[in-house]
Image 1: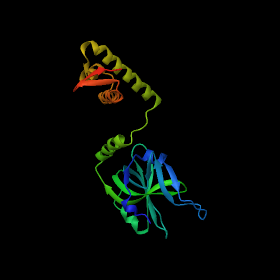
Image 2: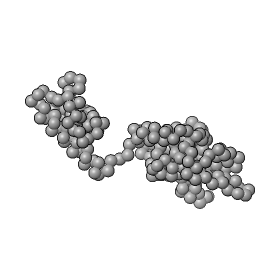
Image 3: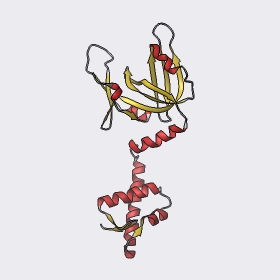
Image 4: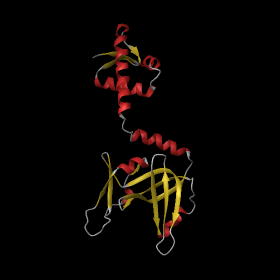
Length: 212
């Protein structure tokens, strides 16, 4: 039996998690087979680490006690569910709280939810910190329009470096200054790609020339 506590708790955007493919155990004995994991790219994910805002809270009445909260991180929503005595984990949570949740993924009628191990209130600023952190690890695929913009930027950078051959190259900082309408980070990324592809080279630190 796997030790779920040792599974990597992946830091994810809720919208990406909901797009992941759910993989279930093969069973003909139950209409709700157990979730094995979800596939996201090359990762098989069973445990997650989510930062989001509480937007709704529900607690059942009667003998079969359970409770749920709905989380929203600005890009998607998912429920966190607890049962029986674990309802106390939600005791101090109210609508508007920002929390970090670490827990196991579960699915009921193919609706994904999280069974929490850890729930902790945190400062809302960490929602933005997490967003930036995830964007580095799980960058969103570019739209067709964005791809065209990147290709146009690449062509501009190459043309600028070609023209500068008469001056034995051009400084990277000068390229960034001249391309005022593009983000410096994108320009730096394209220059690095051109260096890696052998289209340009760096005769000395910070200066590039066209190689072709």
